[in-house]
Length: 444
Image (spheres, rainbow, N blue to C red):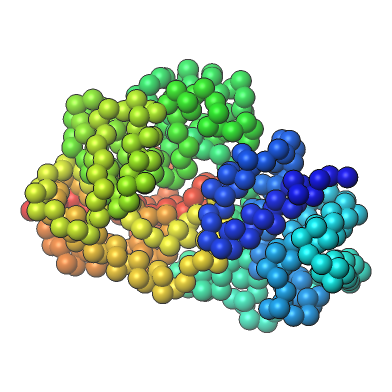
C-alpha cells in the first residue's frame, strides 16, 4: 500500500490546510511538490485535487452538508479530507470509488483517532449510498449560482448587476476550467522562431491569439527547469497581462516608471520594448519583492532596469515630471484571477474592493505629478469589478483636469467591452485572466 505520509491525497490535505491558514495556492503547491518524492503521475493528481477542491469548495460543502452533523466541531483537516474525497468522486471519473474510500480512511487513521476514522467512513458510505443534493433546492438565484459555481455570493451579485446573467454565467463556467500555461518571449534575446523551436522538444506550443509575444504551452515539465527559461529567453506571464505593455505607446529610449512592479513581469516586458537607450524603474514597497524584479531582469539579461524600495503613495518631489510613461498596475481584489488562483473567490469582500478603490486613487494622485506633459499614464488591474476599474478612472479624471483618457489600441480581434476607451478582458473571452487597462494622457 502507498505510504500515506507521502501520498498525493495526504499531501493535498496538508496543502489545503496551509492555504486555509493564508498560504497562496500556487506557491504552496510548488514548494510541497519540490520537497516531495512523488512520481509525475502523482504530482499531477496532487495538483488536480488541490486546485479542484479550491475551485469547487462551496459546491463540495453543499454536497457534504447533510452528512456532517457538526461541521463547526469537526477538525479543519477532516473537512478538507472529505472535500478531497467527494471532489474525486464527482469530478475525476478515472479514479475508482474504492481507491478513494480506502486511502481516505487510511489517512483518517494516520492523522486522527478511531472516532475520526469511523466518522469519515460513515460520511463517505452515506454519501455513496444517498448521493448529492440538487441545486434546485436553493431558491435564492444568487445563492444558487454561488453554490453551483463556487464563488462568493457578493461577487456573483456584483457580476449579475454589472454584466447581466448571460455574461455572468459564462464567466463562472470559464473559471472552473483548467488554466493554461502562458509564457512571454523575451524579444531582447532571441527570435520567436528560435525560442518556439527550443520549446517544441518538450511542449506543444501555440501562439497567443491576443498577445504579440505570447505562447501557450501544453502542461509538461516544469517550465523553470527548461533551458529557455534559465537562459532568460522567456518568462511566465498571463496573456492578458502581456497586453498592458503592448498598449502603453512605448518607444525606444523612453524613461518609464513601473510604480507597483513586483514580481517584474511587466517591468521586463517594458524594458525589452524600450531598448538599450531606454530605462525603466520598478518600485515595490518590500525589499524581498524588489529582489524578485532584480532577479527576473538579471535572468533575462535586461540591463536597463532600475529598482527601488518605494511606496507608490509616498511623495517624491525630486521626480516631478521625470517620466515619459508611467504604469500603475494597481493593488486590486484580483477577481480576474479566479481561474489560476481559486482561493481568491473566498478571501476578498465587498469592503476590500471599496478600500482598494480608495488606495488606487491615492496612488494615481501621487504618481500623476511625476509624468511629463505629453506623457501617458497607464492604469491596469487584474479585476473585473467596475468599482476598481472604471470608477477609479472616472474619479481620478474628475480630480485631474490636466489628464484626458485615450482609447486603448489593441489587435482587431479584441473587442472593447463596456466602454470605447478602456479595455476589459474577461476570463471567458480568451481563456486568460480578467484584466482592465486604461490610458491617460497628461495634456497640460
